[in-house]
Each structure stands twice: as C-alpha cells, then as structure tokens.
Length: 69
Image (cartoon, rainbow, N blue to C red):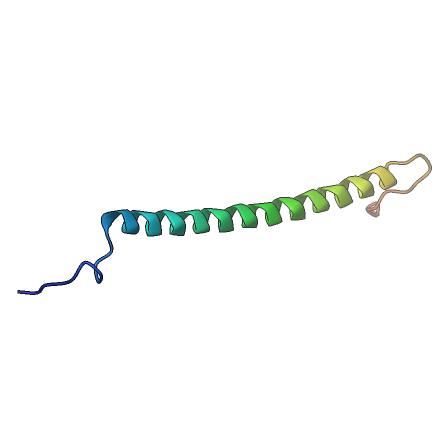
C-alpha cells in the first residue's frame, strides 16, 4: 500500500490551474505566430500592389516580356 502526502500530490485545483496556464501559453504562442504570418502577408500584398500599380501606369511597360513566335 502506497501512501503519498498531500504535498507530493497537487490538489485538483492546482492541476486545473497548471493545465489552464499551459493552454494559455499555447494559445498565446499561436496568436503570436498568426500575427507574424499576417504581417508577412500584408507586406507581400503591399509589394505586389505597388508592382501592379507601377506596371499599369500610363506609358510604362509591363513586367512580363511579350512572347515572340
């Protein structure tokens, strides 16, 4: 028969609190990663839109070469 003291076994509330803190940490990391992804794609879209504006300006040549057959 094994007897463990209350000090060795966390109370159910402590287990729940530890689990909740772990989940919060995971979610904060996910939000941080999503923010990085969002920043990356916003910047990529900004560059793309700038390139599109420049290539469609009057008198400007497009960015792609015409095919010669």
